[in-house]
Amino acid sequence: MARLSNLSLALTEANKNIRAYFFIAALLLLTPQAFAQELQIYTEDWPPITFGNTSKVDGMAVEVVRAIQARITRAAGANTAIQVVPWARGYKALLEEPNILLFTVGRSDEREKMMVMLGPIAISNTVLFTRKGNAAYLQNLGEDILKLKVGAYRSSIFVDTARRKGYTDIEQAATPQIVANMLLAKRFDLWVEGSFVVPSVLKEIGHAADDVEKVKVLDSLELYLAFSLQTPEGTIKAWEEALRTIKKDGTFAKIYTKWLPNEVAPLSVIRLSPLGR
Image (cartoon, helix red, strand yellow):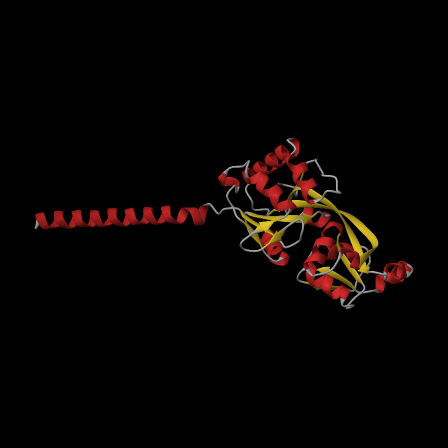
């Protein structure tokens, strides 16, 4: 009986060891997903700053991000693929999920409280456009122009700017290309957009840059890389240091001039963080 009891104890101990082994092995397998979520990088189709699809991503800001990735560690997102997604989807992830980088994001007082912004990556103007030949008439409306419907890219900084300037009737669409087509189809008379993307947007839909004309400049717009608030400090710091490096060694200016030859590259580096970050 004693021999059987000893055998039973030995089997029980072996079972415990086996269970412990498999438990530890399972933890090791789960650790990368459960405890070390990688940085996710999103951008939008907004040429020439960012554009592309699942197989190819390009643009001025894309080249800047890749230049930064070449100077940071894997842990900070050096090997992370850039995903082109609808703006509303990327912006939602930025506000709600950990370890998200979205670019480019227009700077505003409200956004500075909701994310960590690093840049500027580009500086544009927010402009009201109309169809060719229509600008003079609209400019002569005075304050009555505020009553007109404005087309804008859904959930974009341009919607916020138009509202802040007093425009209340804003029709939003999923992409700038759709908004441009709606303007040219006379669905509305005003289109609010970033000045240096308009020629590329019009080209994509088969129109020339001079098919539209400026009505007025609403604001200057700084564009940034934006990190979700749950992104580790070490990751953001690595990107900040790398951005400083490429702005100092001439890489950034070279990229900027290639894509925006008539614009002046912003060479300062600014980090905008909510209190406590």
